[in-house]
Length: 98
View: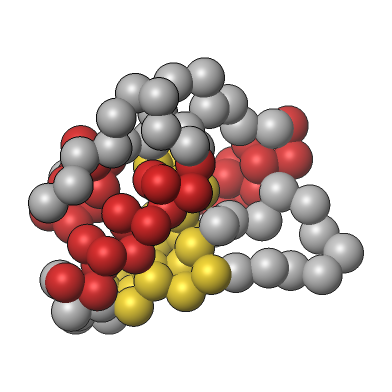
């Protein structure tokens, strides 16, 4: 397992998320919604039907935009599971259900 270091970029965090989800038997789809700002980077589907919307941020200094904060609040209000992934520990929590 490759650890995501503090100086890593967001794409490094995202690549690690994709690798780990696939290794766990899941799917980690890149998402884009045309005309909508702040949509999640990835939709993760894990064995057992668990669906998680993930926003990836660099380990240090990665902040959510106002659009992303609003989107997260909307989805959580509807009961969706949303995660902001900064590092390997966040990926571990996601995969363990914690």
